[in-house]
Image (cartoon, rainbow, N blue to C red):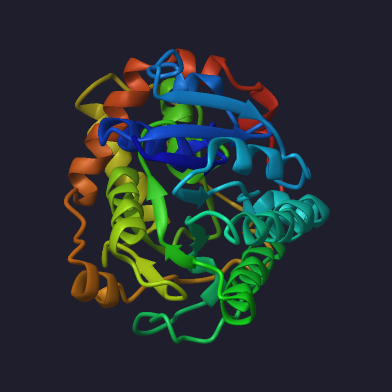
Length: 337
């Protein structure tokens, strides 16, 4: 049975990826430093599995070396990162530490590990590194132009990984994905925050006029793509992972309201409320994902309408998920500067 390390596995994408890896009969070691966005709730369905091991650790810690040599994984998916743009506006330091310094430490230890053992690193990044894409779609050779401290820190980590491939012949691949949605996502992000407010009869806050456009992909489609990249991707390559489906924030909100009405009677306060925009808010992200489709044969299977229904079903059936989180992390507005 092949062993896989997933860093950041208590988070949204990480926990969904672990679930899929276990179903595909991999043994998974989950390394997570257990911050506010980490949640044991996300792994409750498999935390007692004989194919699963959780280790609380920051990948910035030198002890990562011991874990690599102890478990001898054949693959590492690096999802350990600070990800919330608003938080990066308020406190860039934690993003520099987690997304750059910690990745450097992981790369150094991985470099020494691969001198003795065969292993592949998949570094998961974001479409935000490309910055505003007002027309067309950004391909893998598109220049990086990040707008926030978060995006800049992810861009730096991508460059670090790429440089280690070039300089040290490190067996690594970088993926850049569009906005994910689905079960287990922290409500600091748009869709789960809106669902929380719908469930609790609160206004639905939308930045600016709601025109900011994002490409949306259901999280399980993303995870399938990551496994495809691990199994068939070429070392040193970058792969964009997207759905080719863009919606602006206002459209997303209206779809959520429409689908929620089919499940519950909405409270009288559940109405769209436009709020002051975030600083440096990019207008549009859009990926060209033809490369992964053509070279690896991956295609998204779940469209936005189906994905939203599945997402709503999960949150409505797991209302205790919100109770497992700090209320201030759900409600407080960040990134006002």
